[in-house]
Image (cartoon, rainbow, N blue to C red; front, side, top):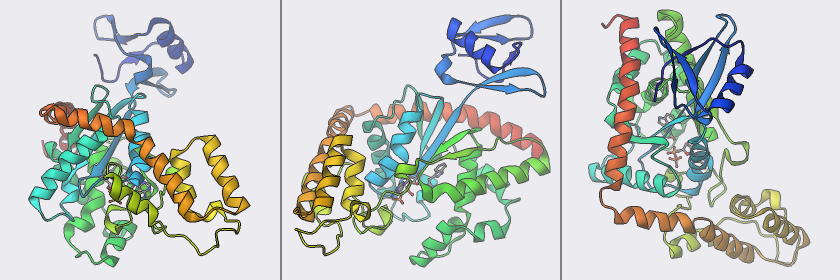
Length: 379
Ligand code: ADP
Ligand code: TRP
């Protein structure tokens, strides 16, 4: 497949779209002749550069990462994994397991290795398609640490000192290491390394993407146009999935319901969701209920409407609602549990996927790093 920044001698973006729809291919200007390449129109992002009055066609790059710091929970799934999986059909997706980032909190090498593989397994079981999206380990592209260093030389201390995530981590008792402080800079390197357009994440990562944009602008102002400015893609309905205590669900708050937890434990977690003391007979407010919020993620429209009525009418206790939630939740992930078992039965599947993903990611990273090293004077 031919990639890069092909030049289109068409008048505008609408022309190009018609072209794609009619031919299912793109004609790319090559110094000597025009040739066709098998670009699927769904994989192509068309931009019209009016200033230069030509079209530049490139893939929309989608990138996201998830830390290898523990088991994945339904907040990860609805906040980041499901949107990321949906986006894999709309561009060139790069998804990775952030093991360098996880080192800021995980001190057990065996656990880090196991978590990394388990995140890969769970992501694949949930529908990540390795034919479409590259799935890889962050540390298989060690150039990101070089890029993080370069970015750190322009990163203002004040910008990082304002990081909510850093302040939260200190408030939770983590030691103030340089790695923890520099966390957003490494994340910026992850994003800028792949010329990413879109970054699907939960709301807690929004500020990190703003920091990434600030750093990209700083580099561009200092050394010339090197980086694209990425955009966060945050789904309003699932931007903060509550945990069983009502706070944001998080691996580190102990309030999680895991995607692939065992049945008994998952039921126990659902049954221990915090509720108020409204009596069984009294009407209840669905908008204030964690049970109802979680049920809305996994049930159909009709089922949600029915539960809302039951809440408003009174006569049913929270225990009943919890049972309904558990049943739906268990059913929602049933096919993924099955897929997970299938993947597990193929011993080399995950290693092969990660190796192919790393190869694709390195291909892009090598090009971008060459551009960066040239621009700053390292080559
Ligand atoms: P955790 O907070 O459990 O350690 P991560 O920081 O590894 O999770 O998050 C991985 C991705 O999942 C990020 O994009 C993050 O925004 C998203 N995410 C995590 N928890 C939630 C949640 N409760 N609601 C929505 N998105 C979430
Ligand atoms: N900080 C992210 C999290 O905790 C993980 C991450 C690392 C990431 N690098 C990234 C997410 C780049 C998106 C893009 O969830």
